[in-house]
Amino acid sequence: MPETHEPPSLFSAAVDACKHMIFSLQDYSLLVVRAMGNAFTPPSYWGDTLEQMDLIGVGSLGIVVVTFFFIGGVLVLQTAAQFQRFGETTLTGDAVSLALVRELGPAITALLVAGRNASGIASELGSMVVTEQVDAMRALGTDPMRKLATPRVVAMVLTLPLLVAAADFVGLIGGYVVSYFTLGLGAIQFWTRAVNALEFGDLVQGFIKPLIFGMIISTVACHQGLRVRGGTQGVGRATTSAVVISSVTVLVVDFFLAKALLYIFRS
Amino acid sequence: MLDVSTTAPLTGAPLVVPGEPLIAFQDVHIGFGEDEVLRGISFEVWPGETKVLLGESGSGKTLIMKLAAGLLRADSGKIWVMGHDLGEMPEDELLRFRRHIGFVFQEGALFDSLTVEENVSFRLREEGLPEEETLQRTREVLQFVELEQAIDMYPGDLSGGMRRRASIARALADRPPLVFYDSPTAGLDPVTSQTIITLILRGRDIQGVTAMLATHRVQDAFGLAHFRFERESNRVVPIKPGGLPRLEGAPAADIEQTAGSTRTSVLVLRDGQVYFEGTAVALLHPADEYLKKFLASAE
Image (cartoon, rainbow over all chains, first blue to last red):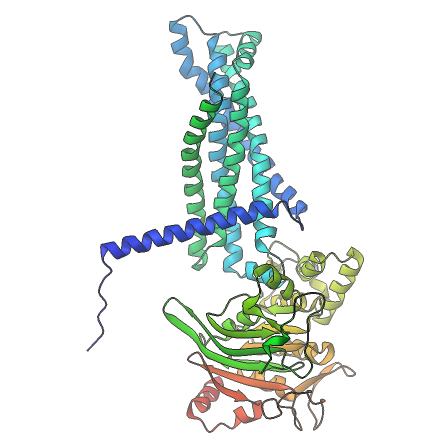
């Protein structure tokens, strides 16, 4: 009599999925603690960190510049019509500046970097796992977490705020160029309003968010890459997951961060 | 059997306890999910010995190597390597322990973004050796595996045999006393396989390396058991009676060290257990039906 296997019940499937999720979360938390903790203890791989900063920072600068020039421009196009109704076109500078520094700069730069670099990190580390290069590193007495994950996390955390600063600046230039040609705003009018609109709390928001987003993107990418199973197909899945999970997490965390920071710096 | 009390803290050079095995497995079990792959494995490897693990694909040869290198942890049982109880060591201690062993992976596992030179010198650089000494030792070991001409090439530009040689060079670069070879001849043509076996013989007979070798090629075991590398003529020659000194403390019955043989022993795995343990000569004339079939299929 052949042995028959009953399909798992809905309840047991849900329990298994929950267990899997909790183990993943535990695994991820350990990675975050170890990757960040390694940054403060020797040995350090500063050469690898600089290389990653170049890959992430310089490598992403082009797409960030182009994207934000047009984001700044389109912000002016969309808001100008409203301000024209009240005869307050000079407020365009305020709107562009606040939107970019508080929200669009950190969030969209993070999404761009997640798309470009989270996929790169996950696929690189995933390929190393499936070709046993990570095991080879362990066999040679080197901690893969310290050699592979920490430099990527540190590089991302240090580089993303710089990219956001560049994005904000280029976005404002884009906004100015479009407001000059469509609204006839002069440079002094636009830039004075844009700079004066910003308060200390806005700058803190614009700086803290990319630090946290950088940590999320890099740790999610390293986690997905280092836990690859199932050969090249697994690498593909990890790459997709890294981008999807890090992008969604960034947007969810952005909401709560914005709420908290607005509460802290409420005027 | 190794005394647990000899387990030493990992400071300085690895401990080789005189009169005791370099590796000892005691009733080791490991499984994945509901499948138990190794079911009570016990054996010993003595200093200077070459232990050949034979078995069908999936019999657990690679698992044993990874367990002995501390890359995996056993579900139960004890594993001592160079006086250390691997089950009791946290990962950071295991990392330091692994700096005293070499591991040659089945597909080489070379770092594909590094050149051959960078791959081979990886551990030397990690240990902070002066650059001049690192380069000198890298060149020496690449000469040893006859791969000096490929020093600036990337793994992707190498043939399968060259990749294995580079991997062996990387494992031997720091002159470890213990090296694990995981199917080093798998997927290679007979001529290249012979080159790899010659390199393993050179490591054993010139550097005095203790080794474990996983393979499904019976001829690899016989090659290691009946030939040696002669430094003077720089070639592989058959072992003459009394050709190699006896191993101190090792049980003579298990390891071939009698006339016309080397310090090589064979372990055949079947269904997650040790099916045969003994000399290559004993394996050559088996009374057992499975071993006969195994040898016949290898031919």
